[in-house]
Length: 501
Ligand code: NAD
Image (cartoon, rainbow, N blue to C red; front, top):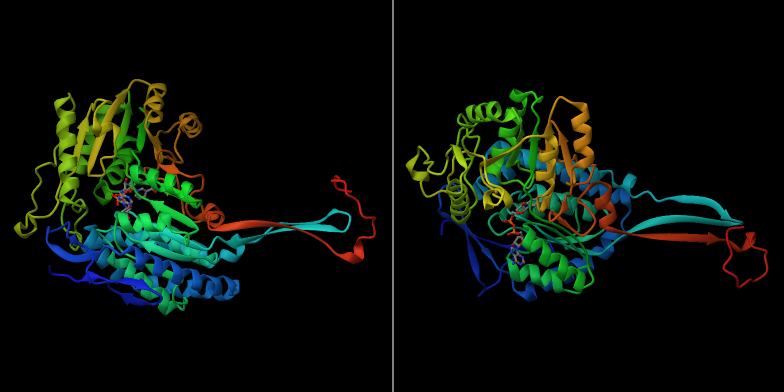
């Protein structure tokens, strides 16, 4: 092993355990082992939870001004040290540097929202709702939040959670994804430097055992989860059984409809970016295009011309546009699904299955070139499931009506898009489509930080989305307070449940 095993972060210091299982961190770029990630024991996770419970009380009791000052400091540290953070993401996740900086920038939006949390926490007040009676609301933290994250956004997805949870007065126990844990330790140290009291942000590494402990522990009040749909379902079911508030965001298979009236040059450019950015490993990637009528052939030609020019290479190289996929297992699965679709009648228009990097020292990495597959049968895995790789699947439809039926038949409902110059089709799509996030000529409609992020159907279990006002609502419980003062109440004692008077 060429790297060290990452430590946990508990009560403001690095912690290691003896005699536990250590999983390898493999470089997606070279295939070499570059570090290790320990599976925390149940006792250690419980210690982190208990530390968080103790720290949370004092943190929640601090004024909003003092809490937001810490978040401002944290925000400034993130900006100053984004290159260092991006370097870790590139090394462990195989992303390009630009994409790593991009995810930090999108996460930063949430930190900036959290810096203004006083606004979002304002309550409601109604005066004189009955004679001498006023009513108002306050929002209080839920307590300790278990945050469980996927590999594809080692900074951004945790930042959908911890700045919001911390700003609203909670403590967080974060479990980063096993292939990309290290950046979370750097984040923990930055929170400490920003003035966050020890214990309010804890990091424990590991896999299933750590997740199970968080889900089962009485010390955890709420679970924020982002990952694949099968695990999101486990998280939702267990959280419901153990009486926790939860939000569990799952997988996706986002579609874009391209209408014959679309500006095809514009659409092609954005489809290439949506399908191949981050090697297709985004929950808001655009792996499926439904081309309507005459749009199909011309669009494929334009998309192919752009995609074959993409520079595939290591994230450290400034010119690289497309990095490797996360694991050898992912790569094998993606190739399998493309081959299966081909066997079932699809046409491979651009084939990246055999891509080899020019630099032979990278041959152990998980490389795939951009791949485009046309006329993919709707029964194949390539169409139905989440490919999570640099593959664009194209299906054909004769009309808008047929296209929207295809889009809405998907098990997933994360994002969707339409490319058209027609306001009428755009408006119909906005109303008809069964996804939580919709783009009109926008391929990856990720909402800005002060709106909320989340899908429909198998893309989200629980009712509450991430960040924005829904994030505030998730991490707080509302109280409604009805007030009367003795000086005003001169009526007799009545036992009736009367209407306002
Ligand atoms: P994953 O579901 O394999 O892992 C997510 C987390 O769950 C990890 O921390 C992992 O350690 C843990 N985990 C894995 N298996 C578990 C099990 N059996 N029991 C308990 N915990 C378990 O997901 P991934 O491969 O890391 O990430 C990719 C997936 O995440 C894709 O499906 C992608 O669409 C999804 N994702 C969704 C969104 C969204 O907003 N909906 C955002 C990013 C990623």
